[in-house]
Structure formats: C-alpha cells, structure tokens
Image 1 (cartoon, each protein chain N blue to C red):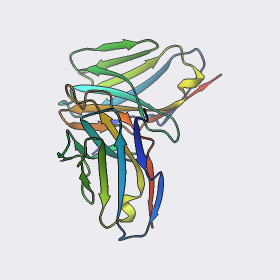
Image 2 (cartoon, helix red, strand yellow; image 1 turned 90 degrees about the vertical axis):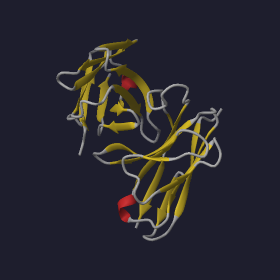
Image 3 (cartoon, helix red, strand yellow; image 1 turned 180 degrees about the horizontal axis):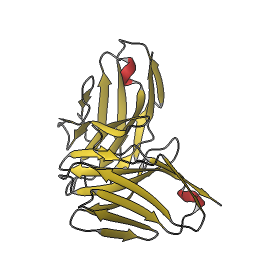
Image 4 (cartoon, rainbow over the protein chains, first blue to last red; image 1 turned 135 degrees about the horizontal axis):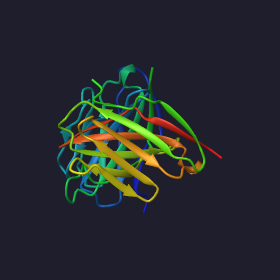
Length: 116
Length: 110
C-alpha cells in the first residue's frame, strides 16, 4: 500500500515548455487535489476532483489543466510553463464518503518544479 | 488576500513544556478547521480538526481551541516532544474552499 505517489520528484523546465505531473493513489479514494506551496504562502489549492471524470477549479487554477480519466490517477498539466509556476506541488486524496474536504487528506511527498 | 494567517513563523520550546501555535482567520464563513504537520521532504499529514459548532477538540497530547468571536484558533501540544519538531499549518474550510496559513516551524529542544 503505497498511499499517494507523485512523479517526478524534481523537474527543471524552460519558460514555455510543457509538462505533466502525475499523482496516483491506491486507497480507492474519490476525492483528489493538487496544491502548490510557495515560501510564506502556505498551500494553495489549484484544482480538485470529486470523482472519476470530474474536475473543478480551486483558488489558483490559471495556467494549469487537470484530468481524472481513472479514479486512481490525477494529472496536472502545465501547457506553457512560466517562472511564476516555480513551486513545490503536492497531490492529496481523501475518501469522499461524506464531505471530502472535511475528511483527512493524504498527501504525496511533493514535486519540486523549477521554471527558468 | 490571506484569509488565514499564522503570524509566528517559528516557535521554540523545551521538551516537556507546552507548545501553543496560533492561527487567525478573516472569513466568518469558515466552518471547519484543520491542523496539518509537515516534516522536511514529506507531504503534510493530518493532525486534528474542529467544527465551528465546537470550541475544543482533544486528541491525546493535541488540543485545538476555537474562538469564533475572535476568529482565532490555537493548537496546544502537551507535553512537547522532540519528534513534534515540524512545520504546522492551520487550514480553514467553507464548503470546497480550503485556505491554509503560511505555517509555523516548531522546534522542540531536548
């Protein structure tokens, strides 16, 4: 039981390049989330999903797209990376039995992204 | 706009003493509050939560207090242990709008 895993752990991009961050969970959770963490800012929600095939915007969605084609996977895409997207990205999941956001969220170890 | 603030970036306490971490919020619509703990190079882990209908929730050494009129919550750790050294984030929730504070780095000295 690996919990929540994130791929890759670290990546360097040039401005304008694209990439996809992969999040996978093996807990059969309904809800999945993508956050970014910046110094002095705490975590900010980018997008979330309440089930397979659904996605919704969070606090800071601009510049990102997401897809939840399979229940266990939640992909975060950057179509044209910008230096402002340099951050640590965390994926999380929660069971979704009641109110997913109030339930314990299980976080992955993070992906450190540097955009030059 | 930072709707959730942790005004103390760091806190240092002696092992065995009480640690008090504070969190203030501005949006009165928040009705659920959580604390997460984060070690370096790991994702945050859930610690404790409280609904706005309560003013206290306790789980072992951890107690969260909520003062709605002051829009303030605090996390008490008694007794503090060196393994508690981590960054602590408070979070506030209104439906699917979840906001985190910037975190407080707690150091517990042996």
